[in-house]
Image (cartoon, rainbow, N blue to C red; front, side, top):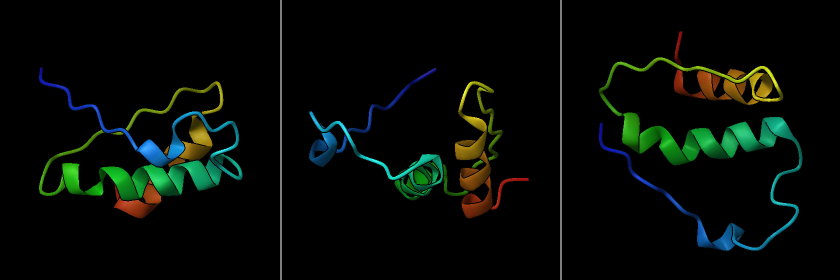
Length: 64
């Protein structure tokens, strides 16, 4: 499997990047949208805080 690392330099060394988990999910969805275009996607969210982020990503990217 090939992996791509996507880094947003504007966020480097910042302590408060996101308002909350929902905001983090919105930014993540916008960032990965071009990488997922036309592909079959399965979204997994880690229960320890990742479910709200996964929910927003699924909503924004229309993943069912």
